[in-house]
Image 1: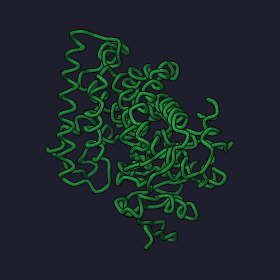
Image 2 (image 1 turned 90 degrees about the vertical axis):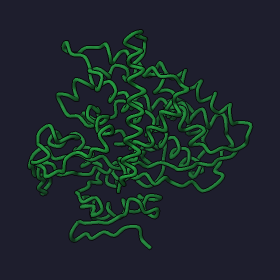
Image 3 (image 1 turned 120 degrees about the vertical axis):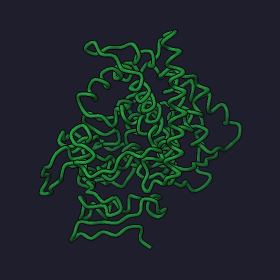
Amino acid sequence: MTAFSIDASTRRATAKPRDAAFYQNPYAFYAALHDGTPTFVWEDYGHWCFTGFKEVNALLRDKRFGRQILHVASREDLGWPPPKDHTAAFDLTEKYSLLALEPPAHTRLRTLVNRAFVSRNVEQLRPRIERLANEVIDGFQADGGVELIKAFAAPIPAIVIAEMIGLPAEMAPQLLAWSNRMVQMYMFGVTRDTELDANQASEDFMAYLREVIAERKRAPREDLLTHMLTSEVDGQKLNEEEVVSTAILLLNAGHEATVHTTGNGVKTILESGLDSAALFADDTQTAATVEECLRYDAPLHMFTRYALSDLDYDGMHFKQGEVIGLMLGAANRDPVRFKDADRFDPFRTDGQNVSFGAGIHFCIGAPLARIELQVAMATLFRRLPGLKLASEPRYNNVYHFHGLERLDVSW
């Protein structure tokens, strides 16, 4: 049974995001779309989606579309129902999220946070990440096998971002648990139980951060939390709600994509049969291998945006508030842009990807994620050269995130 259907004549398609036949291999759907219907209405979501690399890259930068809409239109204007009382805490974490804001609020917030994430600053974390990767591998090397997502992919970025912000490394498992519960809100077909659980996780996360913030106000430290509390742009500081919201975003986004890319990348390399020593031969090739992992099996497959006003785009008319879906995972496999787009080739010369987005919402943590991936994956394959799959990897039911549920390996 096919996991999708496409009607090229009406430019409409169906693919159930919660159907294992789809989320285990969304690339079959993408390949069929590229073959004749690269821009289409995804019936299950009810909005237009774009799969072409050129179009996705352009629309990520198109200022006629934005990540929020309520700064230019009211709920009444858009025909939206009032906010749900039982998701008030989760909504508060989103209210000042960098990922949800548009200028000028976005510009101010990003300017205050950006300095910590520029390449020259995160490059200094490379020795810490390498030490951490080795410590984690030390913990399971003698076992001869391990489930790699929980044992390796998840703890490293969680600990790194926690330490950057100024939270103790031992809090990483709890931060991961809160984050995983909150992330369920971005999935297709969210239930009331999911909403209640994500809201409780949000309440607990915010309560914890407020305690730490109160402590930092009494005794500032050299960490990102103190930086956010004390820095100014044009005489303005972040208020406490903005600091809490930003810290939660950085913690959630600061590990999610890296965990998925680590797992997806290790799986891809092991399945490819390529010599890992060649893939991580030097810093340049290591970087190229990581970029190809990001392109070939991206950690995020859809990024949505709102039309900020009534507008026309490529012969289509969008009303203010209409949503469009930018298919990052599909754009990375666009055969118009990439030669042998469905082939994993860490030595390709046409490498590029939109896995971190583009435009003003380009992932602020991309420089850090790239270093984490380069160091962690190179260390893993150097330490465990006999690494092989111990069972067939399966993806988690988390579309439009895209990551493995388990990655059982042995050596």
